[in-house]
Image 1 (cartoon, rainbow, N blue to C red):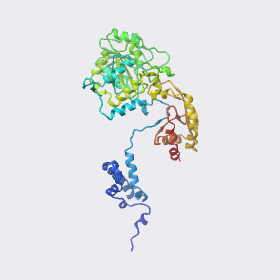
Image 2 (spheres, rainbow, N blue to C red):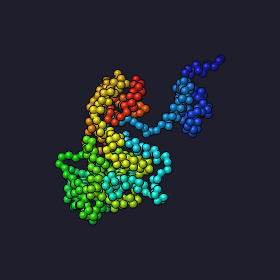
Image 3 (cartoon, one colour):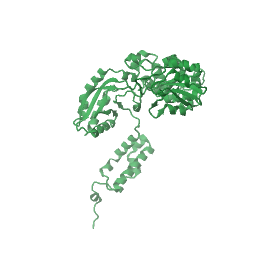
Length: 474
């Protein structure tokens, strides 16, 4: 009796023995191997064949997939080489978004990074003396010029700057802080924990809402090593409040032979009110008020890379630079190059709105953003129809990253509503937007997906993907 034809038995399903050997698949994909090397391609090919074999054993592998093996393997290899960190469109309404990379680097900073990172550079080499140098020397003069400080140093972020400053000036001693300034920042950065990690004993003075000069005076003992002020940039207490400013506190600290350190958090080097933004305390003003050390961030309002900047007196900054922990927290060459280039832009303050992307976004005119929303409305509506409706809407953006938390920036954008009224449908749309080649990040509020357009300077980055979105929603 003639054996039944296997293709008839299995129909359109492939059997395990129909799978090609690894060597044959690699020969069929020789161009792919030449482009990416044997190790990567063979690893992906082996994983692909194992997965297909399991499906074939279960009788669930369509024979058509065997014909597409080279294309499937190519797609796997190229997907493996795609970075996890990707550029996105920030349409959340939060300009300096902690989860989306915070400040955008200026073109000058990007060019400086490209020029220096692919070449040997004088990061720690004194070109004039022809000997080993200190990376801080490359940037200290610039920081001192911009802030009026006697000395300056930089570390990898502002949390590190605060930790290092306290450790260098008050390790094994007491550090006095107002109870109303014991802040917690994102990522579990809590001032009491920082004090403990720095080896200082926290002494709280005053109450949550009111602290007076006498509270500091009465707390000073022979064990006191430092007085710390913390700018509460990520929250605001209103009503019956009182605080002691740096100009009042500096004489108290210095009369007792103590340094005064203030943490400004977000950090701004220019008066933001000249562009209609709320004013933030400036390092220049804090130093003029008598602070010995001022710490602030490089990647928030300053508009540069992640960095922690410490400026102040020669004596205080000198202790900080010599402290052993400094090396562990130092800024690497890549952000160092970007920071120097960013700071140089402040030498020409009249051009800052043009030169600093973050400041440009913060100062965008609401009317211009509303015009953009009106232009985009028909195209976006066509892409999400018929399951969703779209309308333009006046919105309120925020600065973000703990900067000026109660302040809002008049903005505009698109509000997308699910026709069936289901939150699950809206979540599916948000997921589809995140799945685009250039992921689009909005926010869901009051049963609508809001796309705040304040940070969309190149509309084509959105509109060029609407066809892909339309297909994904089918």
